[in-house]
Length: 156
Image (cartoon, rainbow, N blue to C red):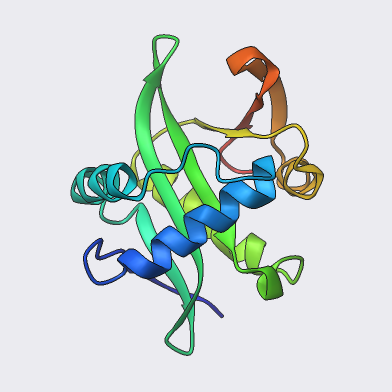
């Protein structure tokens, strides 16, 4: 069972940057313009706004995953947004993704949104398979086809 705690951008900087770099490598095959300083500043700002949405997932005190969840406006309505679902390689495909998803759904319920979105690389087939499994559907390509927007309804 995973435990979740708010990210401390100063003390967790090494871990969250390592996780974010790996997420880019898995998704895009490279670091895709990753700037550590910009990321940490963004993380500080977002964790201050959504402390229960920017969390590390830990098992026995060791970080094994990360969630970055926020609320934003999209096409005139308020939606939940998943900036990052992340598990370390040894935890992928072993049901911990369901735990991350459960946490995300509870976060979105607390913020009273009806749907949530995320973007995923079209080449990241395992992630797309997981998102479909949890009830999300493709809403179409974005950024010139470099990403696919997925959306889900609460209760899935």
